[in-house]
Picture 1 (cartoon, rainbow, N blue to C red):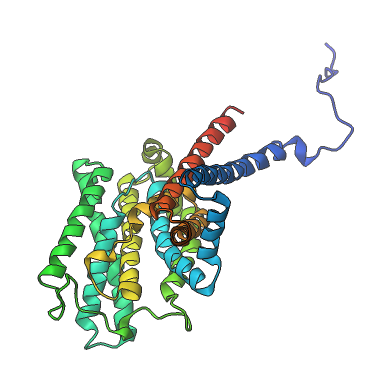
Picture 2 (picture 1 turned 120 degrees about the horizontal axis):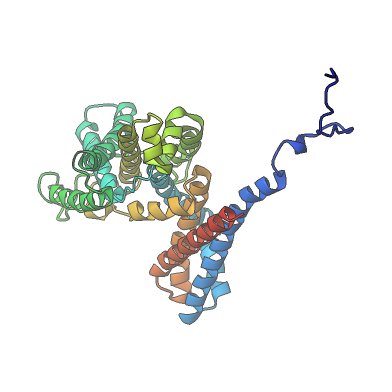
Length: 370
């Protein structure tokens, strides 16, 4: 028997191996990151084009109307101030809903949580404004807003986990309960005795949110901006954020991996409710200055559109909230110059979101086939 070793069929390369020999095509990976962003931008453009058709059918020049909208939102210091004031509540609401939607928890109760946060926070302010310093009252009001919104969301969390009641139904119904509860309070126990209107007494100036310099922009805008990177860190840089995204991807897989799905659902609902409540007390303290029937700004439902248009990412939510605020404020200029209905801005918002979601779905399907 020969002791010689058989020759190996493996061919030895004379050139040194490169990193590209062991990694996937980086161009394909980069395209998979860029294409969804381009698709979202294309959805925005198509949505605006569809809005232009509606403007044309209304008897106005679309280019001139959009220019008026832009100038009405950014063309002066006053316009920019109003746009930023509208951006802050949309951003806060959208950030909270981003966390909930990432966990596949469909919180439709932002309106009710907004109202309960406003009610609890303003109640603290009205009770303490005459006996405590503003440096104590303002933080307590903001904390009251967070707690009020979170507790109202906790009702839906309890109903979901204890009785398996769908959170879409429960949070939606809780909106009406909160609204009529507020209407009762400002008509009877909290009614201003010196007013014929259903409203509470006014928050004194010292306990309202401070403004930045001589502008009307209040510190709530800075709070909203500061929360955007914090939500990003929460979702993508912490174990809790990983669990939230894992639960949203598949509750079955998350349970198999040993994650507490119920705890993740509760956190997502309470977090989104807390930010909705914070939105409520910020709007009441800085702008409305009292509890009354007209404090609802539709932010609970607009926040859903902002979160979806922002693709459930804090950076996208920031851009989407600014975009929606500009449409809303700019629509007032369109209305005054061309007589276009104010509701047209909401229609354009809806069209943009629909086309962005459609583009996102088509992109995901296209990437999935590659």
